[in-house]
Amino acid sequence: MSHAPTDALERRHQAVRREAAARGVDALVVTSLPNVLYLTNFTGSAAIAVVTADRVHFLTDFRYVTAVNDARGTGQECPGLELAIVDGAYDTTLARLLSALPARRIGFEAAHLTVSRHRLLEGALAQNGASHELVATEGLVEGVRAVKDAHEIGTLREAASRLSVVARRVIADVRRGRTEREIAHMIDSHLVEGGFTKPAFDTIAASGPNAALPHAHPGERKLTEGDLVVLDFGGVYDSYCVDLTRTVSVGPANERTREVYSAVRDAHDRAIAAVAPGRSRFEIDRAARDTLAERGLGEAFGHGTGHGLGIEVHEDPKISRRRPDLDAHAEDETVTAGMVFTIEPGAYLPGWGGVRIEDDVLVTTSGVEVLTDVTTELLEI
Image 1 (cartoon, helix red, strand yellow):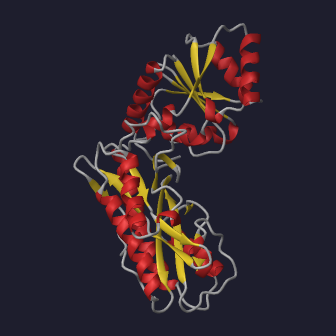
Image 2 (spheres, one colour):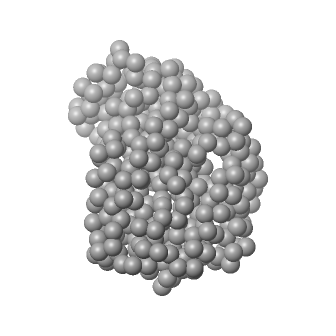
């Protein structure tokens, strides 16, 4: 189980209930495991939560019953939890539970329920004689999750502090002659030693021309004099993810390396300076993108400037450029105090290499707090 205090869980439940009511649903079926964790502290591999006006009905099987019961009476107990033990199929148990609820319009997470499961659930409800209406919802719990509560902010601060210590150790491991794979394995070991449960994603150690691939996979290439090495890694700490990238030079950096690195560093700094409550996420992205364009590197930056951090390593908000096909009506998509996300501009030049610099930031009531603390100076190893 995770460790959010009971009062924090209660506030999350109330926020989800308010949002569900605003969308015209009387109950919400939560099948996304990250969302289940957010609402209940459950970290197992199989469960469904049904949030009603005064209860959180929790469906799981015998593997996790002891863990759920052990949380009762503790400071991390899920308030209003009613356990329904699944004996057989989850959807059969869910349909039986929903049939007995007074709620009629029942929301489900459209992004996390397959068409076949939806049809099965509808059929089971009809067979039970229920007259419930299943209503698709999008991003209901995720929208609440985007603004972190005090417990989450404290957890992410601690995780970012630990990741910063790991980063300083990682940089000391970079040596000519070592392979990318060796460096990646060392990083993963440092994460575990630093108190993280596991890496938050597959660690990236990309050298020389491989650094031009934003999501390169570490291979057997040995680091050589003059290489730029992109080191991108993160960890899971008490169920929350943090993420950091630094780029270092093996040996003295040449003039071109210094030019590209300086441009990315300026983009990183200007994007962070643009973070404030009420600021458009597109404007924050533009601060980084325009800086690189001014330095002739606009086409070398193809991904977004940042992504939200929390229970998942990629969640809302997305700090990205406006997409005419999807974001035409997104003028009001501003960042809010309590949001935590990355700032990670980069420049990638095929055949030459690349640079990325990434930090984790918290939007405060007055501006921004940088949670990670590792030098952004170009280090020549």
